[in-house]
Length: 296
Image (cartoon, rainbow, N blue to C red; front, side):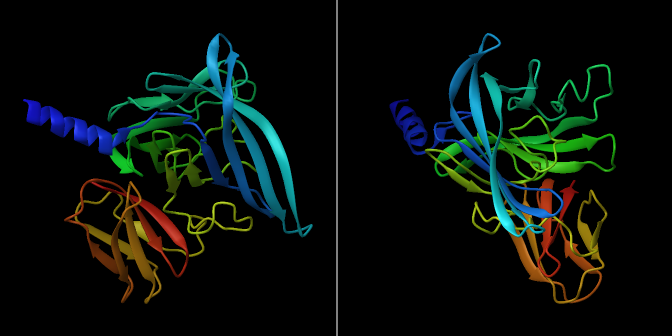
């Protein structure tokens, strides 16, 4: 029994379980998405305050953009965001009340609605976005154990929806901008580039540049016409429309590279039978395109 206890203590000392949100020094950098500009938005946890009877985390937003029309870099501060944490539930202030942002304790099959500005989107209107949990797990980043959710972002206005991974501390990686409740505000919505705090550093597998690169273009803006089928698939994946010679990289839901190769012909066929079920990203280097798919 003493030996087992020592082993358990050794494991806990080498891999620390995470504070699930707004760790000291937390900072998120997102690619800017807006017509005619390039840049990023940076969110910084700057302390706590009392708000609506709860202790809230203050998230300062700073925008850095390059306007191609004017030919100059413009910086500005944006309205602050506020979040609260109660056990596994992270909520965000939507202008009138705190609404669900993340539910880290969710299980496969659970869902929650995406937080919307109640002025722009009243409670009487149909909810345009739901986040459906497909799978859960944990991983280690810089010695810290982080839980994650593999999710499907349902969108009533476009079909199909989109796939994403949500990590403790870090939040969403691929699709929707967080922490922020105003996804519809032009100029600040975009995918994650980097996250860091006093203990860990994380870079999205879809971002290869420096975190503060102003004129960077996110790989997921497609510049080629490759299609992938079937999606979901079980054992055989086909890429149609690919240019022979293109480099292909395959990443799992945690951003780990599980395959690197070259398309010798068109269409390109890939044997996926040995891969574990879950969310994957296919990156085509020549066209700088990234496609999400699901292995069943």
